[in-house]
Image (cartoon, rainbow, N blue to C red):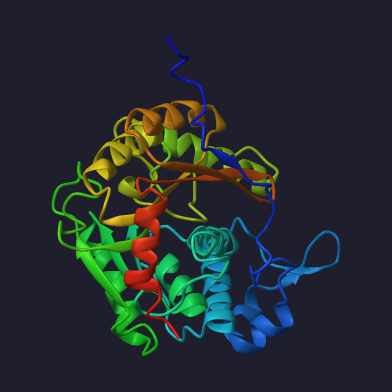
Length: 327
């Protein structure tokens, strides 16, 4: 009897660093950002080191920074989210997109496949629509974005409608059953080249609130008892029953049903302690290949877990059918 927690034999560990193609590798250029988005100016002030910065504990400042980053680097002229919804850190979102683009490239002779024929499903697209924005801007991919939150879908649709570059490139789908992940988001006859997911990390509203207060305390360097969410987050964005561990395990089980409908499945996994159980689940479902890609931004560490059920011959057929069409 083998050890069920033994890593999958094809698992590859990839060195952690900000991706070389990430436009946010260096410090924020506040001169360029305020030139592109003058409204950011009122939030920019010297930090304790004398460098231009913003107060990252101020939700309005963080939101305006995102607007400026998306406008300057990705050509997005309109971007907004409803109050209380997740306002994600753009550099980390960009890192995920660039790393998974390399997953596709690793199966395409090192060349990242680009163009609208490459389709990515973003599970939990959220009100902010950031992953599709970056993926479409950087690689011209088409996106399907699914979410269980109607208001979030409406917000993301407004972003698409207000930006001509996004129209016709991103399709949004309301997930009717909140307990489903891939089911209901992807039709059986459809094929996507990639699935990405940023799952709810916490197992309860209390755990999510505790984590937010801890983050606020660290940002403001003082004890915080009532939280103002600088990065926001509605319940379905921050927590679900069973938390991240349950969510990822269910996603893996569902992915088996779509083994020939998607080339690479992927998800963020926040806790290193979950990786062994994830590998064990993928081994049980007979994934053909698994990759663990460490990511880091500031003091935060995370990782992408990616898997495919396609063997080498199936991967070659997929590439010829879908990727050889690109010029």
